[in-house]
Image: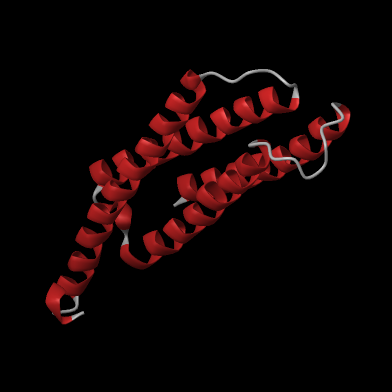
Length: 148
């Protein structure tokens, strides 16, 4: 649980910092206010996918003991976090290039796509671990999975 709490806290810090970077970097480079850049998306990705989702996972861990299947939980944790970090880094890179008036490459989009695939794989593994944890909890209470 401490690993989830620490990761959520780190995402909160980076999410807030990325919002600050977005605001100040666009002002510093006279980027037109209201014009789209992916820098703003990095802020919301880090706060939502990192901070908020991991706080929800922390609550589910407390309720169902997800980490009782350490292999599955470990796969979820590292796949998901690698995906969030990779996706957010590409949003910052692409957004910074936009603000600087430079061309982006398809490589950035491809790497961001890989990040999204890692997030998806992590979510799938998470639900497998959650399903097992819920079944284990219900078995301990004498209920079957179909009753819930």
